[in-house]
Image (cartoon, rainbow, N blue to C red):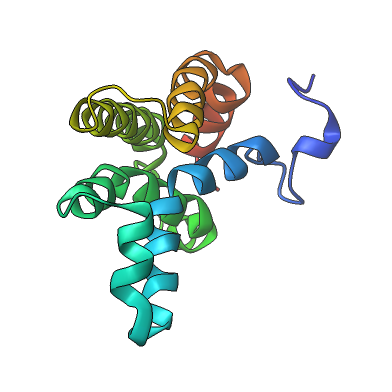
Length: 155
């Protein structure tokens, strides 16, 4: 008997990641997106980065904090290649990487708020709420646990 409805399985019978997971991980990679887009217009790189990261070291800290999320996205996107090479241990690292990335993003938001002496900023408030909700959702998701169990079996 299937644990999930049929639409959550790929053609090989493996459980697919939930759609909300990609949205969630993309949200936590916003720092990388902002950084890449700022580099796309070399004449205004400093202006764009200062708009989102007024403190000089904020961007570097945010990029480092979201690195586990980027790695988990890379693992998710390259799963077929990894399975073809008979690598089956990597799915165990997915949930810890995601939780580490989300918690470090939460810490970065708290760090930023401490720098601005806890003045309200809408973007940081949204990031704080999304971080708290994401920690709960990712840690409690049966879909993700079943997916990791299924993926550890390999082919």
